[in-house]
Length: 335
Ligand SMILES: [Zn+2]
Ligand SMILES: [Zn+2]
Image (cartoon, rainbow, N blue to C red; front, side):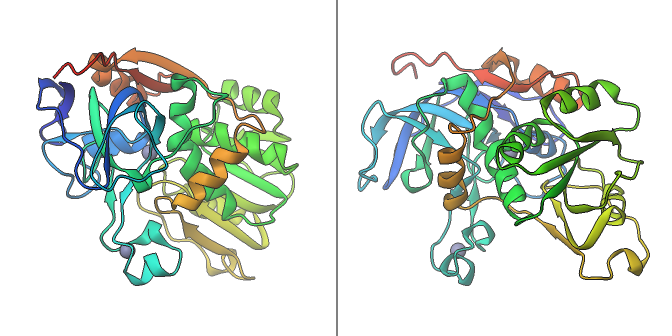
């Protein structure tokens, strides 16, 4: 089968003809239709995340059809069912984190397109317990970005609890999706962009943001919560400084540059800084239920699988006008 393979970090992906994987016990063999590109893919390619599987097939926002069901496969899927495969690919189910409803923190977790092969390929295998049915309202391209930007964005948003006035730092894919849910739930939305990025500020206001400005500005009123999607450490003290008492800063990314020091008075009065790591299956179920009701709309740019490097380069350069979605023309059993 055709696959775009990362042989070493800091190198371009290589188009390779590799053996088609087989569905093992409890796994599905999935014929990939689309796979969205996530910032995490960039971090893996750029060598910013430790110990990826190598060589590696990237991609963890996978939409496809069940081609084969391995022994003891989960009965919730049948051949030809459409499935979504997210970042969380496997957990042991028995560590202290798994047993306390925090499988996102599992000590032995495996991650799609990072420590196990993902969806930049014609076929992939996945543990059926971590695959999802997808809402019919969306086609294969539209639904792909929901599987990471949507899911992990949703977990970040839920961490803000009942916060009414929410600031979002970095208005990329995850922010775009989560803002729609926040507005649907009648939260007040304030958007912080790169200083001077008036185009993004205008478009977020058009979407319903009450205020938009540069990340170097203070909002007109203090925030109950802030979510940081940009991987820029200095935003943490900036967001903290904009918080009301008891507020929370949620860092939604897997990687961030170093955070500069800040005066304790900015943390005082029960302000909280937290990060969000991965997702649980429960996050996915909740999000995939709420998304079509809002309805959350995605903005995408379609590229063929072979142009994965172009997608990554344009992402890195900030040149995409939506989530890049690789379209894989998987036909029959072409291995
Ligand atoms: Zn575990
Ligand atoms: Zn992702």
